[in-house]
Length: 250
Ligand code: PEP
Image (cartoon, rainbow, N blue to C red; front, side, top):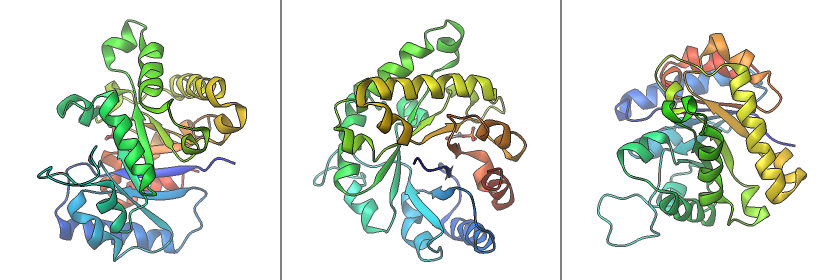
């Protein structure tokens, strides 16, 4: 059975004390409820250890990236092993902002996924088309290529350890959410690709999140779709009440 997950992506926001406060608020809100999904926060590298110290078992912790090399002379990089040593169990990989601003390619991401898995981290692997690709109708090909080139050399066992996040780039941080039907169309397409490659069982068990201006007011409609298994949440994850409004949409 696949998991439902709501995961926050704080991006480059909050200082360490601010992040510890926000994480403590989310943690406290979770204490009183039994959510119908797993809940994860993705925080900057600098915050991982301090945040881990103030959260309990109900809240998962994610990094927002990791290096494409295991260790060594790569000044400024943070390895998957370092991330895992903080107690984080997830890592967001291939976010469109990293592809767009930091030149991450399918090949780099393939290496990052392998290192994340070797170190016991669950990659939350992001895919999605830009507006031009949506408008010119090439978005199915774009999404297929992103998945095939970075993930389809994995064994079925390793593929089964990954979470996917469909994030149409035109919906990220723009306030313009994909409609629930648009999200469902792509999620079903992605699940079909996985079924063709790895079989129906792996496809059924894969968690596919939607990301892009998801908020408490639209989360329920998105999460009701059969192939939408939760959300990757940017802006709305920076406020504990809004984030919890999305968690409780399940
Ligand atoms: C994201 O960056 O992963 C994201 C979905 O951002 P937002 O929710 O702000 O659109």
